[in-house]
Length: 116
Length: 112
Image (cartoon, rainbow over all chains, first blue to last red; front, side, top):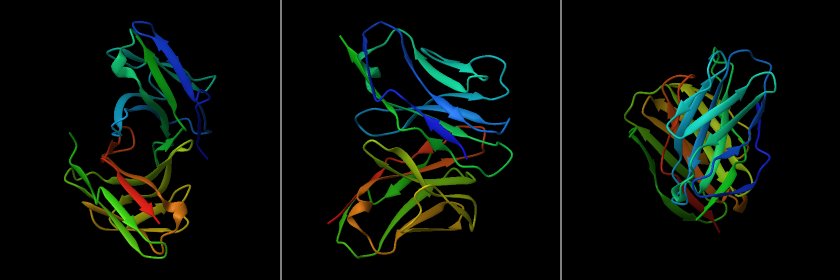
């Protein structure tokens, strides 16, 4: 069964600094997808970035990048130049195998606080 | 924004009463999901659907049932609500497995 682990319940970062949010996963399937979502205090779930297991390069979306280390089964989210608006809960999620009707499974999340 | 609507947005109900939450989409996406969110637990999957009348259980399915008789609607029913089912419930949809899921705004359910 798929499992997502986020070991950092809370993180603090200074504004304009970069921060890495950790995510490890467990699967025996070769084909899977990894996702990151942001949940601000208003409650909505916002999709940030996606990485496929066969993608050769790490995914990037603006200030977000995914540090994908397949052998270590880690998919860390890197936020560059943190902004106050980045303060939120961040969830790592996984779906796999991509050939079956598999659901999207989430980790417990990391609360990021950006300090001015 | 993806067309996904949850109703009701807030509900207070008494222990032992049945409750149905509705998720409606206008995107014609194949996959639909129900999650519950509780402090310290993240989002936990209750049930999901991969087509009309095709559903499967998630991690925390006990006490919940679902139905999907049309592509656009995915209903979550608590047959006899308990206080442990007080939570925020999210519906999500996705077009395929290799793309992101879009989430509804959530339903805050309180069982007293």
